[in-house]
Image 1 (cartoon, rainbow, N blue to C red):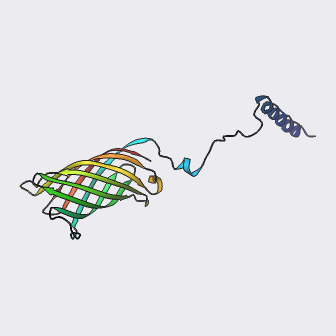
Image 2 (cartoon, rainbow, N blue to C red):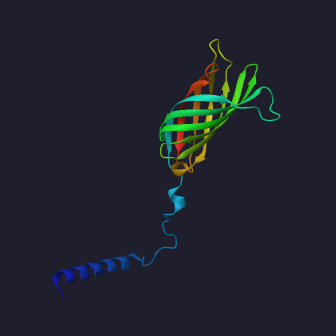
Image 3 (cartoon, one colour):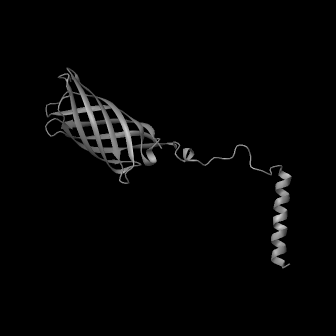
Length: 179
């Protein structure tokens, strides 16, 4: 037997002996799992946020919709942490009162690679100021997504403004995102 073969055999014997002394000679009953569920688990909470500009389009009323309720389709372009340059599409339903409005949004953000982030939000808004600008603020809640955001969670504080003259505006988001 060559000297190299003797070294390999001796090393193998030492490893086998060491394993035999440890008492572990077979796989444990609860092996460490590396499954799809483990790899898609929600990661740590990360600071997240950014800015968006948007344009709103008034939608026709649904049958039976009260006159103080208005629906909008909202197209956004955003720069967001963890998504980069992002587009978003939202459905807004606003209920106007004598003091302002309350609005809910269902939004889908689409990152450059196609991963999507789904959110719902609720905001309160002022009446238009003399120049026709409405100011709003509220909370946006993450409700999952696709790709790396499949199990995402988190929330954002949102604030911004919209011109009733041009139907355009801007939004600032600040909060946390886990994915």
